[in-house]
Length: 262
Length: 90
Image (tube, rainbow over all chains, first blue to last red; front, side, top):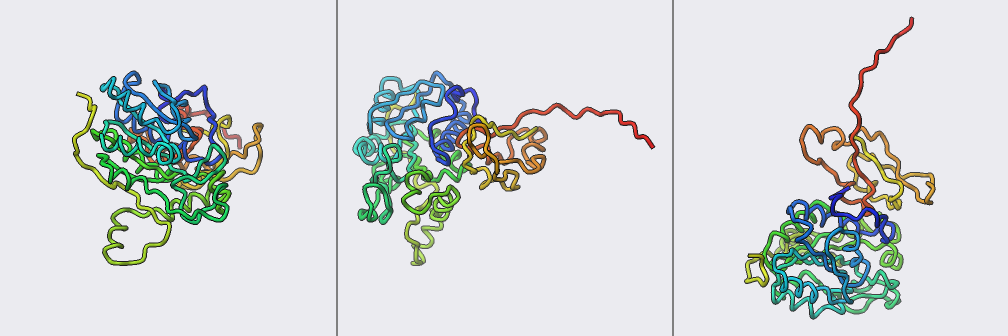
């Protein structure tokens, strides 16, 4: 098991469905935390509401399970009150992009020193599969029975535009790369935003002919394209298949940050 | 070292079957007491990490360990091989 002294083994097995990627993201985060050598007393995990936000409940540190969408607001408060605490925020796409969208862009603008891990499963998984702001165009869900007609949010690009210091995107299949990205994000002063595309075979896959877990993983792996390759294809003017998203480090910069540990 | 699947945690998602480069994990066929089809291990002594972790002093590969959403896969120490005296009767 990864990081046995960080995990509440008495709470396992957790509530996530069979094949859910959120457990892998917890593994990667704990591996990154162990690599950073943080102490348990100086770390706080903060989350909002949703499947992804159950994650701090399985981690043996101080944690806040806050109101829907307000995880970043609470995390900003924690960081302002105690700048010495390392803050990690777990949110989902419905939490971060839908109801907490304004908190998200303002946390990026203020560049508060914390690590935000967004488990983007492109649907509201916990409440029964309603379409979220990141549901891709044409995808089916409970509230979009004829296919989503609206374009989806690209959360990583939004964070780049709003001013986060480190932005990366990976999928829950790319565990090694994800661990490296989270570690780099934790080392970077300022807001580090890591978007993780996770599989949700139960609610997203069921409506989109991706019911089985290998199909769902293949969907993620097949649509992920490294950023360098994407840029090269754009330069060449080649066709980029629909539904492709870039993975890798999108930005790393040194804007002035707020609440950095002295 | 030895590869172990904790049957009390495994939910049978078979993600380890997808990622193992040696194909050690194979999809199981029988339900266990919790009603979950746990993957079976096919010649687990081939696992790189089991063979070489002590030699290199770090975790090698470890993809199944990282991707398992239920934290069910782990390696346990084995007792070193003890030489036995074998008498061969002709």
